[in-house]
Length: 237
Image 1 (tube, rainbow, N blue to C red):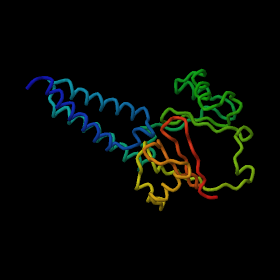
Image 2 (tube, rainbow, N blue to C red):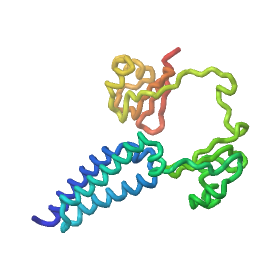
Image 3 (cartoon, rainbow, N blue to C red):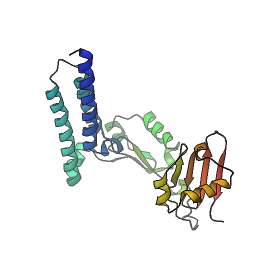
Image 4 (tube, one colour):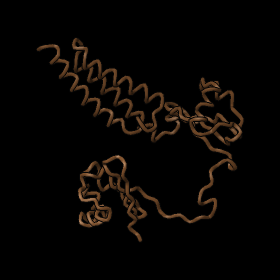
């Protein structure tokens, strides 16, 4: 068998195995990735690449290696869900690096982060003054969580005793010129109703619409494919 055919076959097998194994590991691999998760992901990917191009390597043993790393990652994740102490050992714990505007130098040095790096992380959160920060915490995944001092937090409607309406997730009724009948049925509407609304703006062809989105306040937002035209049709008038 020609080498390139072998590579194609092994690469296809490695691709789908990697897809299956990453699904088994779960969304935590991406959503809450820690340094340990990062290393596991890199290692499994490296083994998959070996399966693809190292034609002299035994394919079965390489696939077994991928499976073992995946199963160990799943096992540790399951143990960590049930055992907080074990989870802290594997993933680490949150650490307060700023308290009442004061940088905790020992935490900074322990995590091998310079003051310049810390300030960069703060600026990325829109914070430029250390004195504005009540608490800043290094999360196990390396991210920085910030709680501003109460006098520096943005005002909210609750702070001003202003009543607000429910603001849920909008529903995309049309995407790239294609009507989503399932989405339309999910909000108890019909195609005829939608066509009637579109006629209000003299829109005759659904294919001319890039996106039509219905929000929970009863507004139909329409973005046309021409790149310039948008409409908002209030439905509760």
